Length: 211
Image (tube, rainbow, N blue to C red; front, side, top):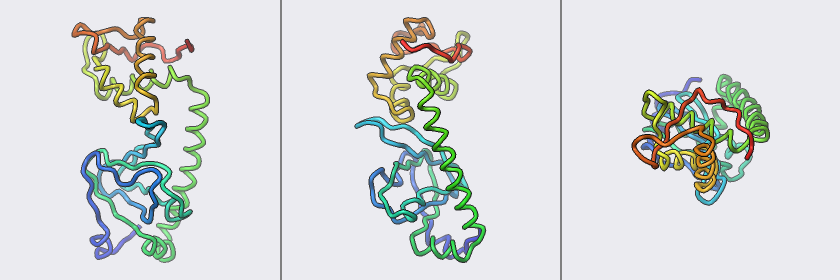
């Protein structure tokens, strides 16, 4: 997908870590190509909770639906690290579709892939219990953000609850209640540092019965 240097320079935009690129419900007149960094697409599930639908990386495109169907943004896009984006407005988007066959083919593949992934997400959400969702999220969080030790990963409960609000689409109350269930069933345990921190052992079975 070739873009001339003049166009590239004029349409380049920078975003700091945790900066919102656009918000769910906003009118949109631009799409974006990531030239450096990472972007999370988040869907609101409550007043203060959201679920991360996908994480996009360098070379990925997003925001195109606002140009195609002229409807408000269906999700929020957030830069999760310093990110550089090539911004395509309506005029440039149409010009590239007509003059750049590689870009047009890529748009078709992306839209097809998005539909398939959306269907898979729906199927997973229907088939997976809330307990399993929180447990899988907790294991993922522990591996990435926890402190490794002899008996597992140390995870601060408050930090995980905040992460779950942004990535699992559940309320803090629901997540805290499920952590209490895990503690009661000895799936996790408090660390030696106190009750604000738990030990997570990823080897624990993921299939959890509903309470």
